Length: 604
Image (tube, rainbow, N blue to C red):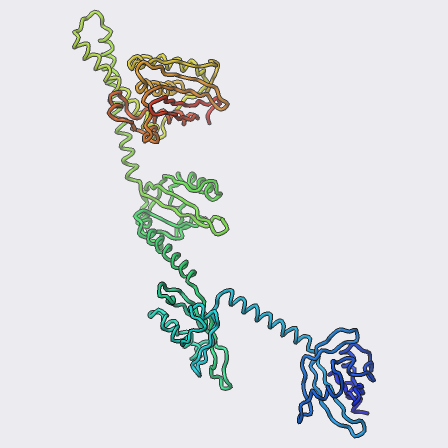
């Protein structure tokens, strides 16, 4: 009785089955396992809860001469009909009174089966991942010096299953000779127990021998014997050719940039968003008179002349905000000696992967000498021009006076010389004026007196003043102005200069005897004035050059008509700086129209 009581109170599910299959004893853990109350299984047939057809079948689970057996994976049935996987330890013995008895120790293995299935699923996923990633797996036995390789490993080596070759020899034969030592190093490191794992990268020739591919090998210790000796290494081999190609291209790109940066003859630098120097090339250090270490301790604000800093910072803010892609500015710098130099600085923004501003790239060219020479040139041109214009005005006045003296009789040769002198004097006077105006525009010193005026009257005045030029070239002007009440904002003096340049230019290149049309039209944003002639037209190759200074098409013909090559450039400068636009339309051997607009509202 005490033994039975102890049996009933054991925590491991136990039951005893009689010769007829009846459950003669069973503890609380067993009843709970199958979902029965206390003693709920007592007196029931074991066949109700276990898939055993008879006691003979139960006894057949034990193989003589053994007296017991362990059966794993037998599916029991709970009271509600649910299946339960079990591991059962069966022991048989004979009792003199009762006959053949069987003791069953039961264990629920549901969690183990779930865990096993998860492990199988995990292994299957791992195998799929390895195949999908084309990772070749190999296993090396250092004791027997044998290698077992996976199918993917063979595919990477382009070996068929039918190839009866030694895979180790095949692999060694195709590793780049310069890389063989490195390729064998991971196995040596693990085999000598220097490290649990090691890796390497090496070049590997294709089977056809046409190219070298890059491989990566990862080797790790997988098994040791009882005394700790390494008996198995496992490794993975991956084709990394694409990655290495990208890395090599990136390396070349970085080296090219570094070489171009370091060896550039102009100053270059990488600058943080706060203005501190990240890196500066030797040319920039030389320009500022600092070593690189000294320069990196400063910032561009410190080296910039105080009077030029605000304009630079305002453009920098626009660049950081993304309003402009880059900018260029001429500004002064204070070098290590305290001297002031001029630099032409070009700045660009570099963004990070998310598009946020990361740093600036800047280039500085020393233009101190250019600025000095420019100032000297400006002063020289202004001095010479003024020195020419004053006596030239007197000479032209004297020639005009002589021309008007009807009381004196001049010979024909004298009259011809007087006419030639007047014409050349006027051309020289126009040239001096054009040069002075061009210099004013170049240095930003041209001033305008803008106010509202009627367009029609200003056009009439310009046509009247240039009628002698039309007569000289055998053409005439025709004005078309439907609305003579149109007004606009312009400088009357400069408006006359624009009209004179366009009218004389049209007269020079118009067909003899043709009419030059001057049209005034009102538009929403401005008044458009156009001057059209019929003549040779503008050559296609010259269209992009027409508004540039000193540009003239068909030089020999142009020289015969006169001109400085500055008129259209000055005209564009006047129109654009007073708020208008200018352009032209031309058909080769046909009609050419130059047009410009005058703003109807005051220009900012």
